Amino acid sequence: MTWRIVLCVVGLSLFAAISMRADDGRPPVTSPRATSGDTAVEPKWDERVTITVGNKEGDLIGSTEKVLQAAVDSVARLGGGTVKVLPGTYRLRNSVYLASKVRIVGSGAESVLFKEPSTKTKLTVDSDWYDQEVTLDDASGFRIGDGVVIRTKNPHNGGPTVLKRTLVARSGNRFKLDKALRENVWQGGDPTIATSFPLISGEFVSDCVIENITLDGNREKNDHFDGNYSGCIFLQDCNRMTMRGVEARNNNGDGISWQICHDVVVENCHSHDNADLGLHPGSGSQRPLIRGNRIERCNIGIFFCWGVKYGLAEKNTIEGIRTASVSIGHRDTDNIVRDNVIKNSGVAGVLFRPERGPSFAGHRNRIERNEIFNSGGDEGVGIDIQGGTEAIELVENRIVEQRGAAKRIGIRLGAETKNIKLSNNQLEGFSQQISDLQKQQSAK
Image 1: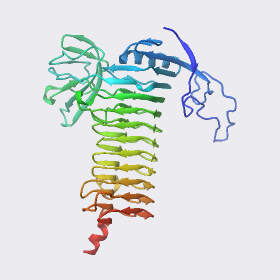
Image 2: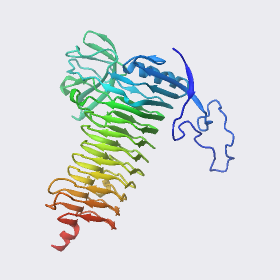
Image 3: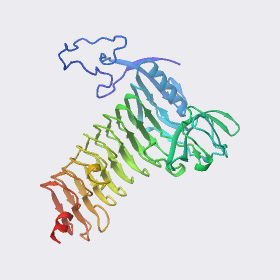
Image 4: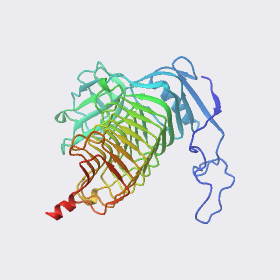
């Protein structure tokens, strides 16, 4: 293998000093140096290691996730840098797992990570929570190194149990897993195993960049795997992650999903033709920045999941979504949605979900300067604020219906909503521009 040290432009100062100035009275850091154990302050290096990966040429040569993973691990061992994915198709049987301070950069539409068809079978022997192996009914479609998902019913409460693992050893139909189960997987729960996984995974890592690459989930030949666990890209418990110029397509689940991840940037990406959510800022994620993306033909466009706060979604184009193009709900507060173009939503352009009552609703969000066209069917709604949602600002939005008025509504305010402020919105073509259900109930 040939090592080359080349210029590494990582964008947004990925490897720049975290803080060059103290705010608590200590002197500012004016001349940072690399010091053993000091992870708070790092010089801004002009160059870091780059490893190229290609089907026929490069530092590492191959066409599977194994060569990509080898490059990521090698770069991480040297403290971070870039994995450059050369043009070609890479067929994946497991995720490419990110490591902190690693940048994966492709060649746009010419660098394609493609998911192999999934295989699914039943598990035939009980495994206890401390076990690190499972027994398959039909192991013919499974290989060592495969990424798998194990699904079963919890034997104690009947709820779903979902476990992501890798197959690492085999004797006949028995496979060893990379990690213990830590859950009881018993026959009474009808357990199954499938070769399902995100194309790129990040768990408990930080300061990564994924850019200029195409991810194809091969939707027609893969089992459904929802965005709480998967996506073309799936991130869990990460910080300062950037996705730029990524095409996430044809996945039987989400395009890009991140859960409990903070300061995530998704910029100039194209998420389309996915079974579920285009972009999924997930539970507890703070300060997401979603800018300049195209989201098309997914079930929901941007789904603010649960406790997503202080985020900004701007200048995105969202079109042909089957339900709501922007969905905000469970304790998703203090976000801004502005300057987006939203067209041909299946049910609503922007939806505030009703949730379980006012304490669970998405309060204090600002919807500003969006252009929303042709939302829903004959009873569609441009902006629909449901449940006990409070303190929403709708400012200077243009909401237009071009197909005829029918029973369509521009803005609908639910009977339990409070303190909804409307300012300089332009509504055209509706049978009812604004429907205030609270006022209608009071008038009866």
